[in-house]
Length: 266
Image (cartoon, rainbow, N blue to C red):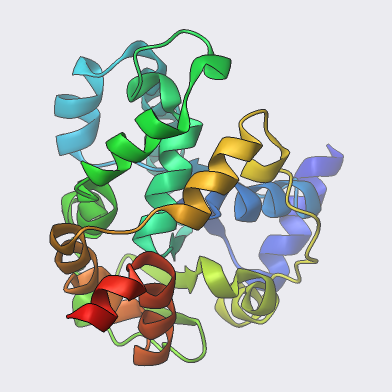
């Protein structure tokens, strides 16, 4: 009863909305979702990485079982949206520099990348070898293979305010807010207020790799890994990096991920 009353007064003030935190993994979507659910527990909030037929019907069913957890939330969102056709869909998506995103993903899902049953058996040599084989395919293609496939929106045709760190756009069936994870702490509050009128308060992030049991390996890999020439072109010639990040930001990424000694010799 109290929850329904709170939702009623919110709808009177801000309108009827469904809040969909829709992004690739390891870009801060859990942080945004947790803040929304904790501070506005009466709102319909969904966190999803996949909604397109390509992922939901083709890829995920054939993937390892632990990926199947993505199917039920997608179905729950679909049913809620169909049963509330008068609600406006508010999509919040996030983007992150792809090298550190993929390193975080490899450490989060280490069982998929290394043939070992115990995380304590992981060795830095094997991790670095795996990183040097990496293609960054998921990160660099998610906005095409998933976001565009489901929304019909090519995000690379929408102007993004690189310096501000976020942009929002209105479409016929929904609105979209896109935020760079690197600026999340600074811009989430004004971005959400501007986008949907919600007054969020930033809190400590509980989903940080440094707090997990593979923290030392993660720190070592994320501070010593350098891209090969092939990987350099994949990342820094990509639409994702050049659409969302300024030349100054890209220059800092290159300092971090490129072998500067080789560049000096070239």
